[in-house]
Length: 383
Ligand SMILES: *Cc1c(COP(=O)(O)O)cnc(C)c1O
Ligand code: SF4
Image (cartoon, rainbow, N blue to C red; front, side, top):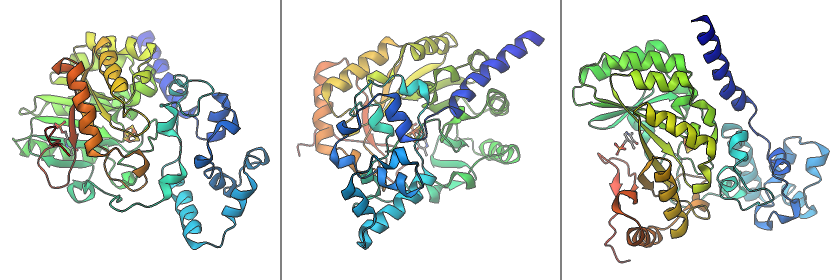
C-alpha cells in the first residue's frame, strides 16, 4: 500500500511540475520554437511594447522597432488607453503555455495554429462593437461557483484557473476568485442539487476542473454519487491536451469505479493538438469506460478550413473520441480577431457534411444568453 501511495503521489507531481514549468514569457516561447524574430509579421509587432513597458530586460526591449517605441510614447489617448488595457488584461489573463503543448508546435513557424491560439495579440486590446465582457451573461446566472442555466444539468466551477490560457476564451473576464468552491461551499452546492430533481447531470467545469488534484476530485465524485437522481457526471477539460500526464492512473481508476456514468468532453481545435502521449492517455480513459467527446471553437486562422476540420474529426475518431460541438466564437471583448462569420461557418459545415459520415460531423452551435440550451445554427439558411 505504502509503495502504491508513494508512486501515485510522484505521478501527480509530474503534471504539477509541468504546470509550474509552463511558458509565461512570449520571448522564451519564441526562442524555444526557434522562430526568427524577423519572421513575426508587422501586424503583430506591437505586442512587445507592453512587455517593454513592464520592465522587460534589455535583450527583450531590443526587439522593439523604433516606430513601436514612438507608438508607446505616444500622446494619442486611444493608443495609451489600449496599452493600459493591454497591461491590465495581461495580469488578469497572462500568457500560459505548458511545455508538452509547445512541443506539439512546429519549430520556426510563427503561424503554427497551436501557437496562434495562445500568443497574446495586440488586437486583443482593440475594442470592437458587439464584443463584450460577459457575452453569455454568466455572471447573472452564476452563484457561488455553480451555473444553472439549463434545466437538467448544472455546471460547477471546480477550479478557476487553466493550464493554458487560450486567447479566444470567453471566460477571460470571469472573476473566478469570487466563484471558486471550497469544501463548505461544495456541500451547499450538493444540497442544492439534492433539492432539484430535474438535475440528472453535473458538469465539472472551470476554468479547468482537472486543475483540482485527484484527491479533491475523488471526494467530489463520491459526494455526487450519493445524490440519487444524478445519472451522469461530465468533465469539460482541455488539460489532458496540453499536459497529457494529467491523466494519472489514480484518476482513471477513480473514474472507472464511479457509480455515475462518466463523460469527458475534451477541447481540441486542431488535429495537431492530438499528440502520441494524449492518444495513449485516451486509451486509458477508454479502458476506464469513460465516454470521450470533443468540443471545438471555430477560430479564424486556426481551423476555419474544411480540410482541417475534416482531419480533426478523423483524427479524433482514430483516438476514440467523437466530435460533439463546434462552437461559434462567443462575442467576448478581446477575441474579435478570431471571429468567423456565421455564413462562413455554414459553408464549412456543408463541406464537412459532404465529406464525413454523420457521426463525425460536430453540431454547429452558438451560445446565446437567456436560452435553455445551446442554439443550433440552421444550415439551410442561404445567406
Ligand atoms: C454548455 C453548457 C452546458 C452543457 O450543455 P450541453 O448542451 O448539455 O452540452 C450546461 N450548462 C452551461 C451553463 C453551459 O454553458
Ligand atoms: S482551457 Fe478552456 S476555459 Fe481555459 S482558457 Fe482555454 S478555452 Fe478558456
